[in-house]
Image 1 (cartoon, rainbow, N blue to C red):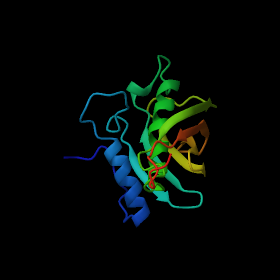
Image 2 (cartoon, one colour):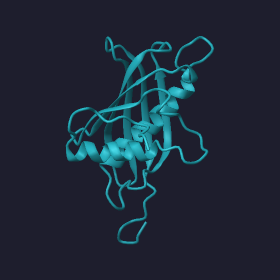
Image 3 (cartoon, rainbow, N blue to C red):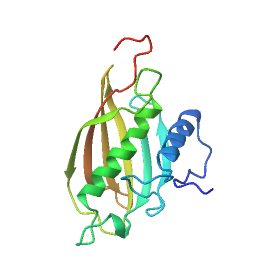
Length: 169
């Protein structure tokens, strides 16, 4: 079976391998659900670092199915991609009782700075800004890969849904 997310050509360290495997599992399309198709945009895992701050980066191309009628990345698609891929770094720093189930989105704020035309190669960089016992704040940026222009910024708040390890909530 071919992977829907392509790994880098270099050897990954242990943390990068963990985040990559979470990304690959989240990208499997074995059931019908609202999602984006990593194969359609040639999603590639670029790197991950435990930090601080913990960070992951991906490369992908803006596919036609991600675009609005003007041929630019659709805002809803940008929000979905940020929601989906920013969660991978949170899973990378998780442990039992602490976001090991990925949590649920509490708030997702997206700021659109410039259009991203179809066919553009972009880099998505996600960072863990803060994690507490019950809430986490993640930041994501979509940048043009060719010149580094910042196009979209996302702030993603997640609530921990893990049962407490000691049984208390």
